Length: 389
Image 1: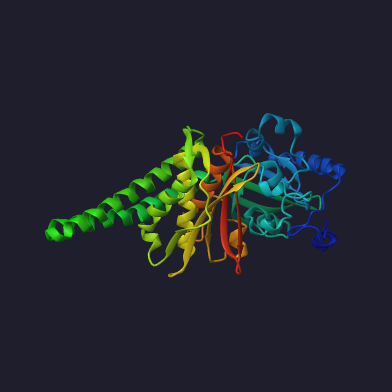
Image 2: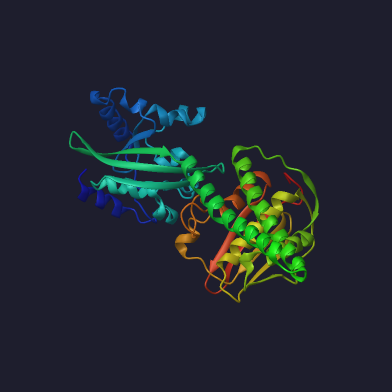
């Protein structure tokens, strides 16, 4: 298929929001797979390279996959095979199953590095991209992908290679947090300690209060990262207890009213917020609520107000919510829960990801949000009244 024919095939599909949804017939997949397998020059090379390697056809369907990719899949998926499927479908991307059209066809796919690299390769240009994948089971993948055009017997294909760089991204994030955020807190501690040493007695109480606040911030940053590492590795152990939602809100609001992020901003509890008894892990629930409040305050301009609240969800449990008057751009909305994505710069992007991870994997709830210029942005977390309810 030449490029003009590829463009015509893409034009036939109107339901897809990004790349074409059209697929090749099963007999064509089989023929193409045999064509790739017959290339003796490949030899053992695909199985010794340290990354996932695929060959895709003009419909972005896999016609060859190396052992490295197959070894990463659960046994039942290996048995089902990967031929004819698209990379996002094989890797379990949540967006690959949002519609019947599959990987590459949703609005979210517009910002997918893997899809954009594949489209570039299919149009004759090699490309390197980074790709963030949130999997249906809650896991996250950070990939670096390479695509290279390939022609066999006059038929166009693309070689698609993907390397897991999750550890690299996590190292960048931790370095950023420890060298920047925690460094700032440590600098504040040093500054107030020196003032305390040189200050007059009437200033001692003020400086001691500031030191206490900075110490709590430092411990909170460290504990937050420790919690996230344990959550991703499946090592978190929950301690459920009976809690009142009103007290949770009050504790979180009091904590962040004293936080530097609330400078020149207002934080309040909605007057209609209800006090509902819930059984959950206090530390994790407070962590989620704190991250929501911190993100909302960071999104505000000076003088604006962040509001938190709680309401019952009949038959479902409770809903905690945090509202700020700003609106997120559509591009941010489509990527907000992905690990490593952040509007605050390279190496950040763990806040909303951790909210989703802790809520959905450990607290048996789910996260949602709305964001419009007229109504502002509201993040909501929904939880059962008791675990596993």
